[in-house]
Length: 364
Image 1 (cartoon, one colour):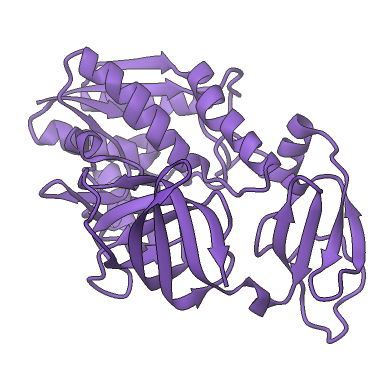
Image 2 (cartoon, rainbow, N blue to C red):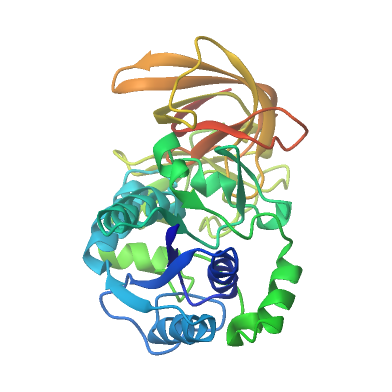
């Protein structure tokens, strides 16, 4: 097969490309330039898309003996990922930009260009597995990225390759070293790739501006503090609330509600965060076909953690097909804008991705 290998400049994508070459495929490497003003160097493990990353990817391609190109997707990335991220926070939501990047950049814009150029598959360094066309968790559960790939439909998955999903991360680094890849010990990227400083609140504030509001106690309605915008908060947040005095009983306070229209941020106790129901829209069923009725599943509401047994039921929403998710045990910190990813209930974690939706509301 002709395989396009997306090479970020990290160890995972380098080994994924190497494995595609070793499997006998005709491989071409491509690095996506996603920043309109890429820095020369990374800041430790923060950020990506620097010129250093592009150079690392090129050197890996040279070692593998494959053609290599840099494709400019910066404008598309800004529009479909960064601008959407900012707008979601301004609306009081908590988005995951990796989901948007996979959905709209890597497995849409990039995959479409690959197909137009005659490539049969797109290989990436994601930690996930494809088994008989089904998306499953990676062997390394701590590194598993099936959550951020759950937005892919059956056609996108049919043209995807995840060559490293069957191997734990330490072994990937060892393999990279054996293959002579200089990125073998390069630090993993953390946080949001387009915010290398790690200061999400400052990044959003510079783009949204000051939108004053109040922090209010959920039980008494008392105003506890002022704030400069709801974009500085997310459901379940404990630190950085701007509240000087502790609760009367000394218990910590958490963000339990965000109203972007009034600018009100509500805080309460940990128990106030518990929800037993979730509704979601923008539904993707991995098989390409919605189930006829309720399905038992394990739902995950964050990239790492937030799992519970559940029953998911397809419903007709005001803006299209949706899902109602009834939880078998309560979850905390469920925020609008996050993805609710459904797994077949093979074990406590679930393994096979069934579908996903964007959380629009939760019920106690």
